[in-house]
Length: 310
Ligand code: RRO
Image (tube, rainbow, N blue to C red):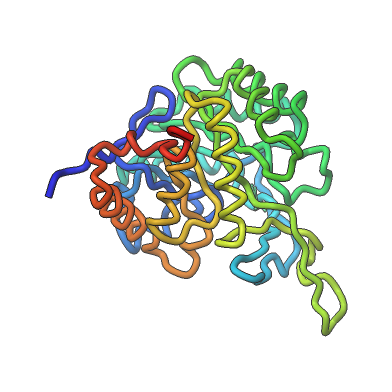
C-alpha cells in the first residue's frame, strides 16, 4: 500500500497529522494521556485560559440533546499564572504539540494574555477564542461583530510578537460568517477555527424549568456537523489561502473527511472524546485509510476538494 503524507500546516507551523483535540474537551491533556501518548495527535488545543482563575457557571452545566449536548461551563479554569506554571511544562515534558486557547472579558485582557505567551517556548500557535457562548453578556461574544473581532485580534497581534500563528475561533451564530472571517483576516490572523458551539436551550417539561442552571448553553455533537461543513465551505470559498481548523460534531474518519473536503486543513475532535477517550486516534486512523482508499497520498490534496470544478 502506498504511504500517506499526513502532515499539515497552520501559518508557519507544521503538524505531523491533522487531527487535534478541540478546546475545552480535553483540558490540558492529562486525562487523555492515560489512554495514549499525546505525541500521537497533531496537536492538543487547551481549554481557553483567562487572566484569572475562574470557577465557571453554576451546575447543572450539561444537558443531552438529540445527537448532541449542551454545555454551560462558563470558562472554568486555573488562570494564566497556574497554567504557565503547571500545564505548559507538563505538556512540553510529554512532547505534545501545543495550541493555547485564550479568552478574555475585554480587549485588553486578550492583549495581556498574548504578552504572557510570547516568550513561552514549546507553543505552536494561539487560538483566540472570541466566540464562547457561555458569557453573561452577549456583548462579550466579540466574534459576533466585525469591529470587536478586529479589536481583539489587533490587540493579540500587537502583543504576541512575530512568531506565533494566531487562530481566531469564530461563532456560527452570526448572519454572515464570511464577513467576520474577512475582518479577522484583515486584522492579521494566520488561521481560523470553525466552529464554536451554537447557542441553545433545553426546558425540562417535568420541572417546567430550564435544564441548565445558566439557562442557555453551547450545542455540540453530530447535530451541528452540517452547520460546521457549511461555515467551513463558505469561508474556504472566500479565503482559500487561510488555513481552517475545522470542528463540529466529528465522530468518525468519514466525518473528518467531510470537513477537510469543505476546506479544513486540520480537524479538532471534541464531544466524541467524552464517550470514547481514544476517539481522536480512531478518527485519525480512519481518515488516513479513507484518504488512501480514495488514492490520495498527500493529505493537502484533499483540503477543499469539494470546491474543485463546482
Ligand atoms: O467554557 C465554556 O462554557 C465554553 C467555551 Br469557553 C466555548 O468556547 N464554547 C463552549 O461551548 N463552552
